[in-house]
Image (cartoon, rainbow, N blue to C red; front, side):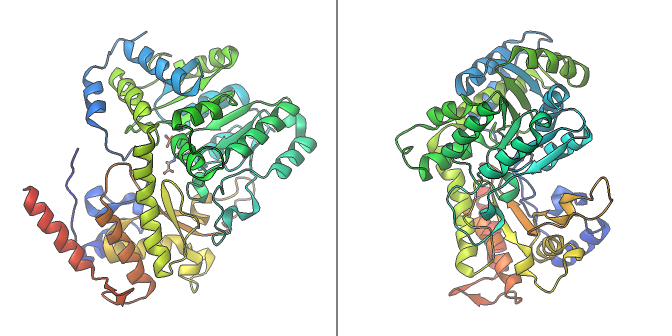
Length: 446
Ligand code: F0G
């Protein structure tokens, strides 16, 4: 699907952002030129997915679209019990209704904010156990999303009774889409087995993680994405899926498990809050498009091009000396806003400040991943200051051209060096040139 992009002037953007109370979420999408707020549900579907959509079976119960999705999930992940839901956080809610009780502790490499919120909503604690290097933006570790095994062991040792399961988030979103190694997942499974604990995988970007394992971990070059995925999920007791990422659809999610008792208990929750267990708040056509999306996403060529785009974008910034999280992750580039704007104090939300500056400069929308996102501590009401204040640029799948991503990079470079139109790296970073290039392309396609 091709969509119009919307041009604007700096004067318009200054007015719009003021009207939006300096909150980028309050902008209308046609006030944004390049939208990198999220890679969630913002991708473009393939022609095969659009065709699958037309063939959706809208029966209330037992639709053939559900059975198709069930077959695909069983084939890719090896998990036979499937509950579709409207998106990832609904899967979290359904599974946690079965597994999480007040006082529990859930250790993970990192929790996404909805996952954390669903755990805290049940009066339990979400504890992040990243490797020490995870937030050191300068350390170029190839598989930087790993969980810290000794911290995990310590939690299990000290709070054994309170831990209902271990959670792994693939890839690690909050540190920029950093992958977890197969070695780390295998070690976590061994620890889980030693302590008699189940392993749950937040799988939103599972295919991107599998691609990094194939490319970066010793011994996996000859293994297909499908084989690597199967090997990962053989170790999982259940998976949570926001299909809006690696499901390649605009809405949808699911929970899948190998345990019938978890499935039966979660089904009751899903029927109350989502819908009957064979559609879970989705239309039959959505289930069909998702089944097709899952088969497309486990393709190494697709993943190479998708992650390649993110890497290329990141490399332009690295070459210009912009402080970003290294190495570049799968779905996003994270700018270290604290280093970018060292004069702005943390209590003034430094990454949000940078996000606003960039919007006014170039019409580009990113998102703050820092103190603002962390929210306040529910017990003390105090600010939870982020270790690193990040501005995230998440790249929608199959949407923007590399030239458009280069425009974003140039805009950031202009801000960094404080002088729009400056000659930098031997190239004139004049945003007007990019605008003109897009205008002439638009004229060509009519
Ligand atoms: N888990 C991870 C790792 C996520 O990144 C997200 C969403 C969710 C769960 C929740 O899924 O949105 O379908 O309910 N991440 C989006 C983002 C919103 O922008 O990173 P959801």
